[in-house]
Length: 290
Ligand code: G1P
Image 1 (tube, rainbow, N blue to C red):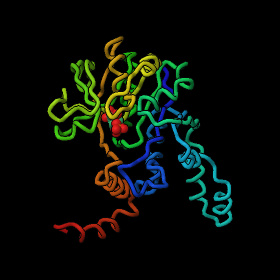
Image 2: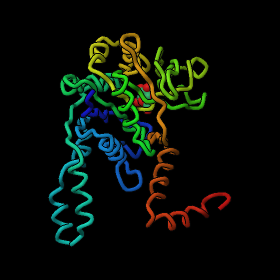
Image 3: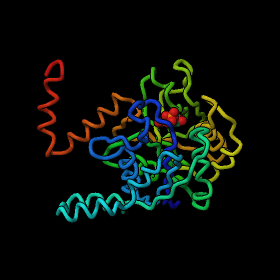
């Protein structure tokens, strides 16, 4: 199973992050010193995926531009002798091969993935990564799925345990644990009521899927919120040859949630040795016990 492409749906409105996202795509909001979407692309690259397919809309061109050269800025930096900065921005332009596909109507995550059909359906399998979920750990989140997908030759989705009161924000799965942290999925429910969820295992925006999904998506009726849900179409894979879920090890921030977005900013800033002491000095007096 060869996985070379990742589909990154970026056509959402970002209403949770308004007013910041009134004219800026939510994926471009900085998390410390990089736009959030750059962390997603870097996770894919660290996992051996170099072809990125953005599912965009008319207002998202700035995302593609971020992963392209900016010759004017390069000239300015070169003339100013700021060679470290020059190298930094060239690296971003060269990190991935990008393709953009317009999602002309925003009909849901399942519909967004279906927009990539022509580009990925000749591959054995492809990755899907949702831009709201930033993940960090020793082993990149999507890489953990790829390893299982390759050894089991089945599609795999990433899950994490969430508190009971939050299950209604996610797709929730039920399954049997076939080896530690790996489940054979029987059932998936998109955003169940808190008291109706089949478990606390939530889908966290990382998927390795096979082209067998596309006919299911094409036939999929609108589900939760009147949208074509990826979660609903995945039930067809689970009922057919099978679908696995892997409990992802590592940290995760939902950057569409302000508290988690701000925590992600601080987490990354704290990893930067040059900034750490200054940041802690500024933060301390703000905390009640500071
Ligand atoms: C989407 C999926 C949901 C998943 C979530 C993870 O929901 O539909 O199953 O749990 O991403 O972030 P959204 O957050 O786009 O509403």
